Every structure is written in structure tokens, then in C-alpha cells.
Length: 304
Image (tube, rainbow, N blue to C red):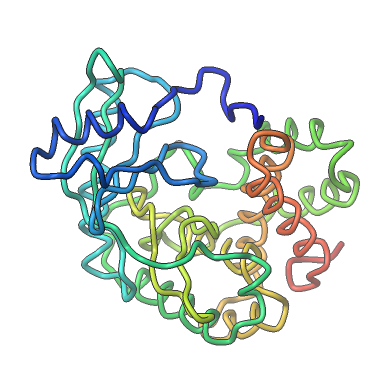
């Protein structure tokens, strides 16, 4: 049995999910409600018929604060959908905490496609071009004077120093920590020069959908907002091989500094995936390994 991903993880049965969905959406057929197998780390994903999906949080927190966060996510999803060149979920409804489930939860439209496989799609020119089109569209959207607000990735690399050091220490028996530490020593000194652009802020394979070697959808857009232009470049190392990464870089016109900062953000994201999920989420742990390996092998990510 795979252990839970989080110490205080909430349990949601299919029967309870159907009950909660029927209460929120009286027109939904409870027989069509089913929990989907997923590598998602923050939510249990529930399919509702052919057109909808619900996301129930995996960890408890303050319900009022969580409701405020979900409302902000729904607003961001709508803004993202207005500029995204690919299909993406749109907000539908919010569920309230109850005696059966203590947290608010969300319902959104369903987008068909297969979750991106970082190995299977790595050599796809079309996927690299689709990713470039996505990033260019997001970068062209107006920030309307907004700037990055943490927490999370997207501000300064130095803000993640303590986290990275902890992850490196915990990864000593799992990853080539010496080589990765040497890279971080350089990446952590890269000063940012470019202003914020609108960004998805979590372009991991689990949030990208594919079909026939193309990108056909983008998920989890509730974090859409202004951030370091290098942040969404993480997808280059999560998804693509060296030739396709260079193809993406050429289409985006990235400077050496921006590209290397993108590699640094990919590392900040990947370094926590292996040790934290090594037993509880093999898909995420494998992503951490493959991304770290690509970063170490890529001379464009910075000198070793």
C-alpha cells in the first residue's frame, strides 16, 4: 500500500464525493462521480460526468482562508482562460465545508487529454512549439500594474535558500547532491533584470495535457499571476530533451541570464520532489530525478 503523501492527509471516499457533489450540483448524476487516479499533490481529483471535475484539498487548513484562496484561484482561472491559446478549465462552483468534509472545494470544467509524460513527449518538435506559443501568449498579457506576491516561486531565487539547503541535505542518498550543490551555488547568485510578466507559475507535466505529441490543454491555472519571466521556463527541463529545449529557447528569444534563471527555478521545484515523495508519489519523485538529471547534463543551464 502506498502511504499518504502528507502526515495529516484528508480521506475522501467515492461515496462521500458523490454525496457532496449531489448536494452542491443537484443536476449531477451521482453515478457519474468517480475519483481519478492522479499524481496531484494538493488535491483529490473527482470526475463529474463528461464535462466537470472537482478538486478536494488533501490537507486541512483554516477553512475561511482556504475559501478566500479558492475564490482568488477561480478569478485567476477566468483571467487565464481569456488569454490561453490552449483549452483550460474554467470555474463553475465552490463547495462549502461540512461535517463530512471539513474544507471548501472547487468545481471546474473538464479538459480532455493525457497528462504529459516527461519522457514520451521529450522529443516532440510540436510540443516545444506549443509550449512556446503558450508562454508567448502569457507574456503578452497585461500585468495591469501587478507584481509578484509570495509565498511560492516567482520572486527572488535567494528566498528559497533555506528550502533548497534542507532538500539537498535530505537527498544525500537519493541524488548526486555534490554536483547539484555546485550548480545551486551559482544559480543562487544570478541577479534578476527583467520585470514581471503574467505566468502560469506551475508548469509541471501534471498540469499539461497531450494528444498525438501535441499539447492540448493546461490545468491548475489558479496560480496565474505576475512573476519572474524565467519562472515558466521550468517546463523546458521538466518536459523536453536538449534539442527541443533549444528550439523553445530560440522561439522565446531568451537571454543567457533568463534561460539560466529558468534552470534555477526548475531546480528549486525539482529538488524537493524526490525525498518528499519517494515512497508516497512515485510519479512526482521520478519527475524530480529526471529534471535534476537534465539540468546536470545541460551546458546551457550554466557551467558545472
